[in-house]
Length: 328
Image (cartoon, rainbow, N blue to C red; front, side, top):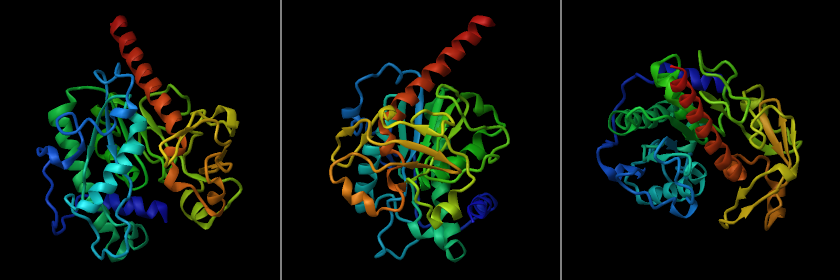
């Protein structure tokens, strides 16, 4: 089913459909975060600004349009309720990359959560409508902000779906691939041969490719895992390689909903297509016992691990480029 979704999106991405929502990324208000709009959302998480002058981060937020009371397939970018949810998730999630470069995060006409399970009755069109906004925002970013700077792409869940399509449209075998530091795509199944020239990075300072993971409770073989994630490309987001196990003491930090950082919170097991973790050591940890998977926490479970790794990759990219110049 996963392969069918991606194939369908690729086939339809240039198909026309009736526009319900008009986005204009020359309008600063159509960005959650951009240097010309709002840079305060992550201010509390930024203490090291050394890389902000060197690299960019283009982030796409996950599905926040989930309420069953809505019958629409897509939500307007000026919907007040959805904007509040978007700002909250962007503050707590995208902040993991906030020290790795200047942040760009567009609002987009997001597809409802049910799109993934109702592809033939509106879901495919809704997802492509959402992607058309993300693509438009990225094109505006390239034309007006990038100026040849290296960049990180980051997105979770639906956001990762759109990042995957951006890689195919703008990077895979194309000139822009030379500027790619890393594409972080947790919460979506990525085939091992998803791209023609972009590979999964299996060392913590590798650059020019992608990383992905999907988080489940240890030893819990759910139908969702078997149907969606089994066999997909994943790394261990604690060691950033193919280590089958990372001890709890290796875990850098889980940014919890109380906005406190919990270090050494769980052990991590790499399995076929997923990452299984032990129950996190956080307040009210007993509440997580009933959870079948930890998809909602794919980023925040590894928040500090991501923050450190993203900066390491930017520095590795920078050193590589400096070495090239010295050799030329």
